[in-house]
Length: 505
Image 1: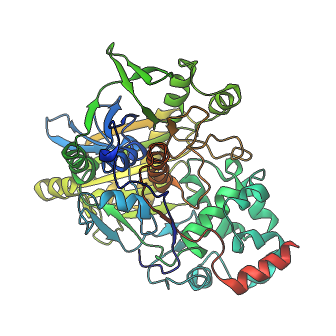
Image 2 (image 1 turned 45 degrees about the vertical axis):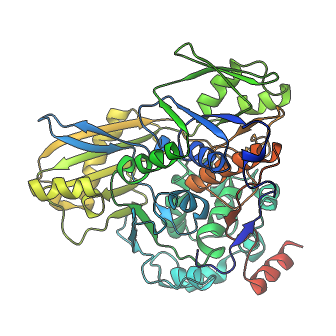
Image 3 (image 1 turned 30 degrees about the vertical axis):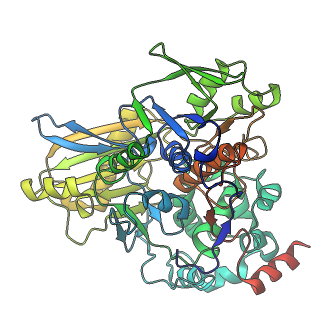
């Protein structure tokens, strides 16, 4: 939190906690991903009785971690792939500070180079932190962006990138796809395919399937809207060990009951809520937070006719998931070259989107590498539309192209994960997306697919909606909530913003 222009969104004020109430409220949180854990933390810290129900055997949702065994019986850490903890993820970081105020579980990645089909490489290392100097310096030293490209930009069409306001940008650009928008501003093709395609696919979507408003908001969050810099941190151990096991301990110290391997089948609304599970339990509560993925939310709402009204239920039913993503993790008997970055983004090398070398930062992979002399490498394919076996067979040759030293390495173990549970952020999706608040008093939604009119994305959107859900339910009982923080909600550089606003008139 080094950006002096970060914005505090003050929570509703009220009683310091629920202990002064005639009866202590009870809330059931469905889902123990980032959103659910943030909601549970926000409620429990204000004296609310909380019970968390999670269908998986582990916490963390899509950022969860667990242990598997290789064919030789060696236990190894496993998760669903690389996640970047950017410095402007204020609300997520505040959640993690509950287990370590110094955030010692995170380690910095000082660079994440991007390389395209022609071998051109962009880097974020050593850029100035202050906008717009960071974006200008990146453009000027990029091999895919030249000064003449800056002159050729359509200033009027490009103005929204400099004058982003949230949620206003969605009214202006949400009906346009990111690829059409970038073409309309004459953004150079090489830079478009490298830099913006990499960011677009981090939303598990091709640029043609991503809302231009999401792209512009992302540009604001990571480039022109924040002076936290373009570097990020990574968890220095598998997610369960580094993050969620300690947070579970913290929640239990607050009296939170956490149950894994439990699916919610129905929620009934009345004087109190009744939550039914696949174990045959009927749990009662004063409030419920549904912090599930899209399909989980739709399944519960479809089975719970008491919830919401017709319009709201239609909005939930209209949500979509993004295309599948594939993670191929390899345990190799030889190390990759020592100069390999922990993370490499790729453009124009389908189906490969990035390569992670886990023994550069993850404790369990480091230990395995030291014992065996090998390396742990992960290949990601986002928005995968082909058969998993076909995608996997094409990922290995791409790794060999980029890291030739791996051609002669033997694969000691491998795991392939394919999931399709990330929310879609397609053109026109924003207006109908359900919000944290619902028509049913005492029912809140949270998750990275839930609308909140703040400049947040990905894991930070999940954390922010979780805190907001807690605040909503706390407010019903007159209890103070938790302040939220974001990058500025509009373009921060006044001369550039005024210039952009003139272009938009």
